[in-house]
Image 1 (spheres, rainbow, N blue to C red):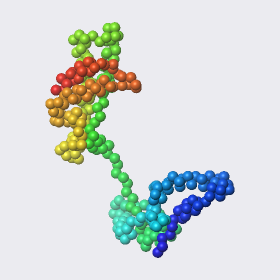
Image 2 (image 1 turned 135 degrees about the horizontal axis):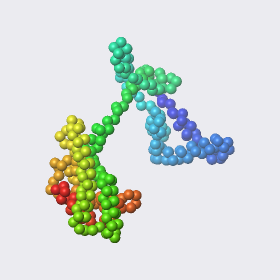
Image 3 (image 1 turned 90 degrees about the vertical axis):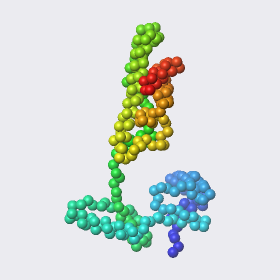
Image 4 (image 1 turned 45 degrees about the vertical axis):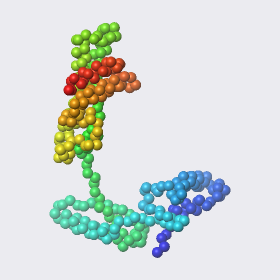
Length: 286
């Protein structure tokens, strides 16, 4: 049986053969439509094989046949569809008397006005099963995300704000400078450690979440794909090696130095101040 050429392709090819003079003689609406189609054709049919893309909503595939194209429609297995529908109908009949759950089916139009031309099983092909998607479990999703990607270090805003407020108040009382005596140094050290405690708390929360999903994750809470040793140690203290306190302290000190609100740095700290902060942090977590 010789396959019929898609009518839309016939119309497009006919339009391609029209001359600009012929189009100019049409009415404004028809002229605009034809010119738009020609522009689309020039962009979408410009590749060597004649097709750049196929409209995703179409149920047809255009396959090359000589110098032309043949339109086909992929179909599922008709005999299998017939057997699935038979069993589905039998189940639903019994479900009426047994108060069981029905199997939902949908409707998929096949074959246009003459579905029998498509297949002997056109009716069965047009009755697909319908399944609702499972509801998302956000806790499990979060656990898998931590397992594979770890967590992003976020400096606690309240602790950062308390530190900034203290520095501004002290600087206002001492001519714009922060005194370096022991009393002021100890107070600032404590404010820095409050920031670090907020970061460490993020790791503890992540570990508790992973522990609750032990049945899903198995013995290894963190995937081998997660190679950031600072994040691995932050989440799981058992993975902290001897170098972890220093690398963690340097990571947090760098984050503090880059912390911004809008375009402005939150705390104006020089290199020496950041090195001192890193030493405090390393001592606290070692």
